Image (tube, rainbow, N blue to C red):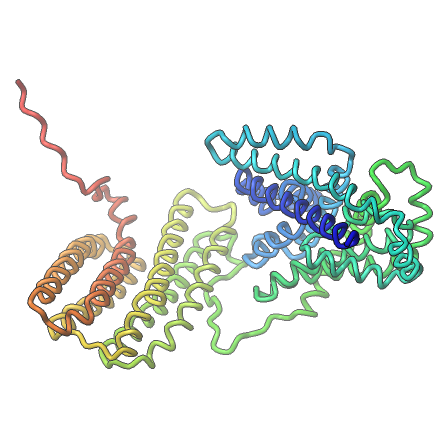
Length: 547
């Protein structure tokens, strides 16, 4: 019974530590998340800056896993070079070790003060205050958990069961490292395991082995989290795991001399946390000169795999980025290709609607994935436009960016709105009234025509067509309102078809109207440049007559 109570107390203390870590991460993200992302995304022009970016981001987020996932996403969007990403993660590893040192520096007495200050700060309005308050509460809970962990493990230090267990692990360093690695994966935190090792009275060599295992386990979580991501993101996580695993394999046979050397040092915060810091610093120094070769090796180990039928960018040439005119022309052609895919999605949905057959809808989901992929590629490409770009080039880049974003929204509406609605019509064998069917089919035809005209406007920037498109928006709005009114009239008259398809009819009208609103947006920048747009559709209120 006593052993169960001790285990529950330890588990609760570790849970409180993990909860505090999460509060710190969420609070810092809320208060300074965008700044941390900017530091991480832009601070990679040199090795030193990349290392410091990873270190600062991890100290702020209290999680090397979060830093690794952010870095992987940036590499996937080609905002960070793969070799720089590995340096970022070396800094993140050191950041985690520094966090352990700071937390274990005997500041438990500050826990109530931090929680109180965090509570008072979080009551103020604004994300910076509320996020900062949450982070302070989380830090206070982390310090409090260390005190609870120390109290919970006190009965174990002289327990015969622990002595017997330690005797079994005496010299079995790979087993001890494996146990610590599994705990780190379960907790999704190497810091929690290092703190647990710190709280136990372990022999120096065994403590070193478990800290090494925690290092490996902490690198497994990002690999699992990026398993379904693109190959570029997976390379970052696997590279970090490989670096840590090699470091651990090299150091593991020397746990005894390392433990003896550590005990000879004037330790202030404990062998576990200080060895954790020294190990990651040594790993950074030794691996840094070889990050380029490491990135190349990982690229060969995880090659690009072409997905059958996948559409890759055809017109985005990285070598043209320093010539903005050429790069923007390529991005424009890619945007037109995305528009063709969206038009195909709409065509397949209309065919399914007309023929009352769900088979054409099978292609819609595949096309939507391609639209998402290509618009991400265009956005990443435009974000890397060369310094030679002038104000006119930047304006054109924004126009292209707005267009592909609107196309992506149209694809989402078709895939998540119109296609399921047509599939429901087919599956339930619903039949619209003749008038209702004609109204919806007219909206489909107008929408397809507007998509083609929108492509032409984007390509030619024709002011007359842009003005006509804005007039069509009014026609669409009137048609949608008139169709809704007629549908309600048919409901009042008791048409059985209208009663069965009421919500479906109105939902499809709404979604077709939303699609057209995104299409019409292609005309906005053209008419705005000509000064032909007004700020608001509201009429001016009549001025009161003078008295």
